[in-house]
Structures are given as C-alpha cells and as structure tokens.
Length: 501
Image 1: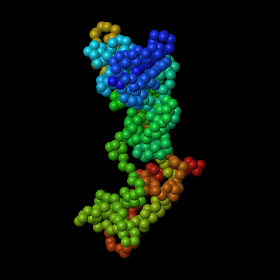
Image 2: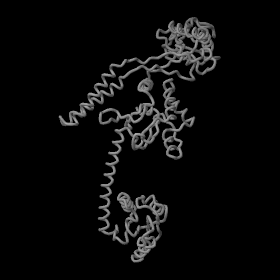
Image 3: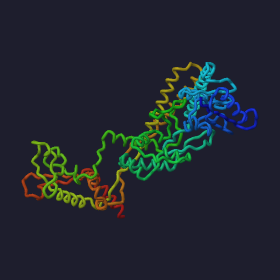
Image 4: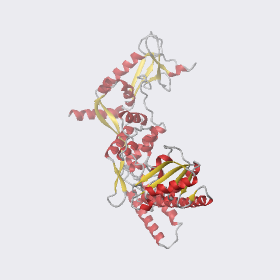
C-alpha cells in the first residue's frame, strides 16, 4: 500500500504535536503494517479551517498534481480536516477514488467496520450543518431583500455597491458612467436605432459589459465579454432601471406591506421607462415600419398612378439603365397598363421637385414629450392592497397582526386617492429644428436621401399609359408631400420668420 503522510500544525508550540513527532508516529505505523510512504503533505502554520483542497501541501496531492497513493495517514483526523463539511467532502472523495484514511493514534480506519460507521455519522452531522447553513443564508438573504440592501453577487448595469451609511452592510448607488451609458442607449433606441446596431457599436467601441465592470471593481482582469442583443434587451425591459428589486424572471419582490422593494434610486423615471417599453413593443409588433437602407431611392416613394390601390413601383433592369414599373407586372396576367419609366430621369425629377419646394426649410426631428401619468403607481399600490387583503383573510381577528395590516391598507387607500387627484397629461410628440435645411441634409447624406423622402411623407404617382419613345418623360407625374400639408407649411414658415427676426 502506498501511503501519503499528512502533517499540519497551526503553531509550533507543543512538542507532543510537533511536525517531527507526527512524522515519527506515521512512519512507525507504516513500518508495522508493511506499507510504503510515497510522499509527505506538510502544511505548517495553516489553520484547520482551511479547505484541504486549498492547502499548499495537501491540495496538490488531492488535485492529482502529485504522484499516486492509496492511503492518507495522519496523527489525528483534525490534521486532515476539522470542519465537518470539509471532512464529509474528504470521505466522499476517498470513496469515489477507492482510497482510505487512517488516523494512527485514534484507531480511525475506513477499512474497518467501526471506521465506516464513524464516517456515516460524520456525514450525517455534515448534512445537518449544511441544512443549518442554508437556512441561515436564506434568512439573511430574505431580510436583506426586504430592506432593500445589496445582497452581494451580480450588480445590475448602472449601479455600484457602496457601504451603507445608515447601518451595516452594503447598498447600491447610481454609477455615473453606467448611468450615462444607459441613457445613451435609451436615447438611441427612442431615436429609432435598432438594438442590433447598438450592440455592434458597443462591441466595436470596446465598451465593457456590466460583468467586466464588476470584475475590474473587484481587482480582477476583465474577460472582454461581448455585448449581446438578448442581454441588452433584458436590461432595457427590466424594472431594475427604476431601482426596483426583482427575480431573474422579472417577478417583483415585495416587502411586508406588499409594496415593491426599491433598493436604489431610479436611473429612468417611470414615464421614461414606460415610453421605452412602448417603443420596444411597437417594434416587436411590427407596428412601425422602418425604411430599408441600400434600397432604390424611390422605393415606396414612387407609386403606380394607374392602379386604384396605388401599389409601389419597383426597379427593373434595362439595356442602358434601370426602370421603375408597377409591381403588379411581376404577377403574370395581372399587370396594369402603366408603362415603365427611366429610373435616372424619375429620380432626378423627384429630387428637383422636392428641393424646389422644401429645400430651404429647416429639417425637424420628432421628439417624444413625456406626459404626466400616475397609472402605473396607482396599479402597483392597488396590487399591494390586494395582497394585504389576501393576508388579512389568513390571520386571526382582533390581534396585533390584524391591526397592522388594516393600518397598511388604510395608508394604501389614502395613497391611491391622492394619486387619482393629480392631473393626467397624455404623452405627445413635437417637431423641433435640427439646425439644417433639407438641401443641406440631402447634399451631406446621399445614403439617407430615401429616408428623408419617406420621413417628409413624399409620394410620387407615376402614370405613363400611352406608348412613347424610349427614354421619354412619363405622361404624368403627380408629386405630393403627404405629412407636411398646410399645417406643416404654416409651422415651417413661422420658424423661418422667427429665425430671421
């Protein structure tokens, strides 16, 4: 049998347990049984509370970094492990690897019936200790959750843990860098940018993810983790941006009063968060069509002037240039009588007409104006009130618990009444100048010209019924700027007049 001798001593003060004395007893036992000592695991100045796998002497043997052995021999079992959980783990490892443990002075030998019975007793004690630890941990976790303190572990994007100034433990505060990043992302989403494009830009810029930020705070090297669409979408959907605490699946966590636990100041207001959710919902439901890039200039701008439904015209290749034609021509036997129109001529005609009408007008951007709504807070308070009603039905009547619940219910009812008395202002959109004219944007951004036409509501109805010589102008081109109209006309003229004065 190959024996690994284990020696451990926290402090070298007692001669009876000195490393030399431990070694002598192990050697004497091995010689008496005809065993060979193949190595020594010495941990001097190492506390018994250290996990055996983490000790500098014994750890490498247990991790398989040293030679093979069959028996671990020690002066006493506490030289190997003193904590019950560590010892139970050691017994499991020995059983799985067909090895044994011997205490040369205590008569503990896993190869004997008494040794195996003692091992089972230790395992039972370890299981009980583990359950007690779990219960204590859960109790502490629940308490920290309900009082809104940081429980350790993952820190959400935009926040950082700091010592609690009002008591023990840690709390979360807004991280200025993380807050700026979140507001940049939210602003880009509200301006129409896709989450895919935002993720690609963050990765290209090398912006660290929340996991890497947390590693750097802990003094560790960042892993260079990449931003992912799914993760960023979950962040934008989560109420952690409002400072609330919730489970991984988005379930709200409530306190004893039935109210949602807010563990930090919000990064977004309730109105900003609600507007962000509506924007994401609109995209998910495909309620907001988005212009395609790298498409023909007049795609969905040029419409058939013959068909009653005015389907969009598409480009088709020709001998010398491309042509716009009614999309119905792609369906055999259904195509209308409208002819094809040269793409270069029609695109130039539309550009000239568009710039002659609005080229000198200022371009505006559509800005979302948050209203004032308390519906979400009212709904949340009503939910909390409902939970209190359920709790009231389960507690004895006439006691202190009933009085406490009734008092909470009265507070919630007063809060609901106060919120309903506040004014409600609906969300709205407004147009504000960007500082550029349509002509300046047209010349500066050729790739964005189609988007500019669509944003301005331009529609061009093309009609070319009679046969014409190749390359001739169409019989009729009716140009409309749909969303502008007289009201927009007047507003732009007023803006121009104000700037001139």
